[in-house]
Every structure is written in structure tokens, then in C-alpha cells.
Image (tube, rainbow, N blue to C red; front, top):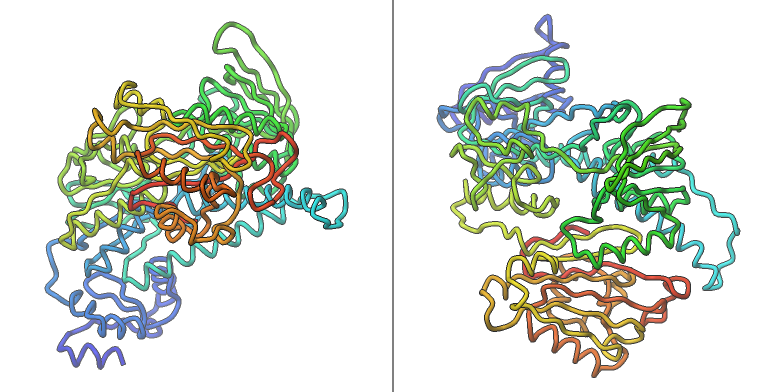
Length: 595
């Protein structure tokens, strides 16, 4: 049928009958590796993989086949995306939907512990998705314990099985890998599981896992290679320590764990490990959650300490020794004070490094075509349309210098970039009003500038504090303070840039009546069905109206809210005196994280 279709279009085609050639099986194996399609026919048009019979007829009906059949251009592809993470895939699929010939190159280099993964990038495989699932696992354990207060009669001893959890999580991640490959096939995007490296202008070399090399050319390129965890550079770090690349597929329970670092990744991992009942210690060099509101960072740390997490502040490891092999084994960590000569030692089963990430830009040949890269960070400086120092090379995601390292931001940036390049659109990505959440046991959501950054950017005299009274805060015993930008004296940009920093209880959006929400609340709930209820909800309509009026009067730069152990719906959220936390994000930005 496909032959008849091309004949009716007056197109000559070359046909290779695999059952009639000597090396047909080998050819089929290579085709399967390149296209992830094991059936025949396997149809290519001008070096673009279309698919099988059904896909070809669908492409004909949509008009895509006719575009592909146009005269062969100077380049193999209109766009080649290097990196199969969230930003790169978003850009590739959007460009293909606009009728362009697109290729995605993606090959994961195994971690020092030998861990690798499939298509989808950090977020899907070793980031947001497995992290939130493990976070949820820890919350479920706490919910089981709390359920007894609601009359549920369950065994006093609740055990957690690490192997069962990781197996389920990896199955889910695997299904996402497959769905990404399927989405690329449906949009006629050529996906090649190879490592991309520039060899000259507009030309790239793709090397697969077997060392086989193929060269491709394109009119434009997008760098979306992301980042990988950084190591300490001390004796024993790569030999005996793991990172977030390894944790989520670790085949055994890590046991007593030392988490080195104070980033969101470090505290999130420490939080859910403690929630699963493990002994956890966090070693902090200087500041918790750098770049976030520091008052909130300390609240997060305080809540983790109540869970039993131990913090070693102002120390850095200088050596990791293996005392016993095993799954897990036993490690000795020697650490030095950052404020003196004090040395300490500790014994742990696992050492998890979460001290930052390095951009994957050093081995992709950017220097051969003149792309400028920050020598210290490896990040790529770009202009406001994600264009690098070389006009036909663009960058999105974590490799971009000075931009938030957030999956939804990368997705939005990639999509908008494709629309500007191939769809005649002008919209740019808003990198400031981007909501984010730290999934520590006390969940922390924020948007915009932290208070410290707001003072730096707009000066303290342009900011004012406004207290939230206990009456406006419902049943909460603890009042809070918000930092607001003055309506006069501040720039328009300052008035547009909001910061909302919130700690509250973790209710789903379904538990908050939509008709009582503010316009902003309603918009966020529509964008993200897992948003929780407004923490400032009051039993008194007068209190809610007052809170609403204050929110509408001035743009928020920083808002901090706490709640008592009972939420207004009467749900018990913890023990007396506990800090209870949840997420709430508020932004006028078009960029919203997924649920």
C-alpha cells in the first residue's frame, strides 16, 4: 500500500527487501536500534524516519509527508537537539509539529557507580519524578502512624521494604521512557541513542554505545545536555560515594546515611530517607538552601531535626574510607571544620553527595565552532532568545547561564524557542516569575525573588513589612510577616515581580472549595491539580476578605505563613508543637511546574 501511495504522488522510492539480502538480519537490527521500530515496512523520507505503513498514511493526511518530500535542502535536518531531557524534547516536538525535520541525540554516560538510564533526562529518571515518589512513600508512612488517631486500627510495627519501592518506581520511570520515545515517533522526530559532538560548523558526530560514528548536518542546533552531580575531589569519593544519579535505583536499602550538601536535592533526599525510618546526618559547609529565603530554610531544617535528622554545620569531608564491603557496606568519613582545625570522624553505611551539579558541555565540541562557555561553571551564556555566541546554536535548560534550573522552565523555554525559530512567534520565556517547590518533609513553595535578593535588587527602602495577624490567619498561633514592594518609588519590574514563600499543611486542591479562592488561587489550581489549599484560609469571612484585600493591594515579594497542628478543616496534621508544612505557589508567570 505504501508503494502505491508514493506512486500516486509521483515519487520514486528505493526499496530494500530485507529477506532478499544476505545481511538482512543485521540491517534489521541496526534499523531497530535507530528507530525503535521492529516491524516492517520502515520508511524514511529525505533521511527522516516516518514510521510504518499507518504512520506514513497519517503523515500524508496531515500534510507532513508532502513537506518531507520537498526538494532535499543543504542540510540533513532543520534542527538537531543535543540532549533528550525535558527542555530538549519539548523543543524538538514543537519544531516537528511545525513541520520541521528534527533529530534528537541522547546518550547517558554511566555514573562512576555504573548507573545509566533511558530517554527523558534528569527529571524523569533521577530527579523530580522518582524523588517525589520516594517523598510520597515517606509521607504515606507518617500517614499510617497518624491514622491511629482517626480510629484506624493497624499493627503498631509498620515496616518499609526498600526493594519493593525502588522496583515500582523504576517500572514507572521505564514507562515514561517508552512514552517519550513513542511521542517522538508520532511526531516523526528522529531519535538516535548516540553521543553528539560538533566536528565543524553545522556538522555533528554521533557516537553510539558500540563506538560506531555517524555524521549529521543541520541548519540550527539546540544544546540541552543538562547537568550531572559534582564530586568532592577527595580520596574515596567516586569509589565509595553515591549521588542522586544512583540513589533512586539503588538495589538495597542505604541504611545509616550521610548526606553531604545543603542544596534542595540534599535536603529532599535526607528528608525522605529519614521519613522511611533511616538514620540520616546532613553535613553542611555553609548555608542551607542557598538562593532561597533563609528564614524559610531554617524552618525547613528545624522540621527535619524534629524528624531525627542530625545536622553537622561548618564541616566538609576530606576522606572517605571503606571499612566493610556489602550492600550496604560500612564507610568511615573524616571531615574538617571550615572555621578552624577541628577534625571529626563518623561511621555510615552510605554517603550521598549532593554538593551541586556541573554542566555537560565540556566534551561536545563547542570550542570547535566558537560557542562561548563560562570556564568556571561550564554554562552557556545566551541572550534573551536563548541564542549563544554562535548564531545558529541555542541552549535551553540547566546548561544556560544565570537561569533557574527547573524542569517546567526548561519545557517552556524549549517550546517557545521552537515557536520563535519556526513558527513566527515572538514570545519569550519569563525566567523570574517561575514557581518552585522544595519537597522536604516540611514542603516549601516559592516564586520570584527571595527577601535577601529583593533587598539587593530594589534596595531596602523600596520594601516594607506587613504583619499577618492571628485573626486573619485563622487558628494559627504564630503570626507571620510578608515583604511587600512599595507602590511608589519602585520600578515597574519590581511591581510585577512577586515572591510568595509558603509553609502550610498538605491538602489536595480537591479539599479546597474553588468558589472561595482568590482569582490567583483559582488560576494556579487549574494549572496544577495538586496545589494545596491556601494556608491563610480563615473560618471568618471577614478574616478571609481582609487577607484577600491585603494580597490584592500590593504585589508580594515574600510571604511566610505557618499553621498550628489543626488545619481549618479539622484535619490533624501532627503532634502538638510540630511545624506543619505544605506547598503553595503564586505567580503571574506562564511557567508552572507539573503536578
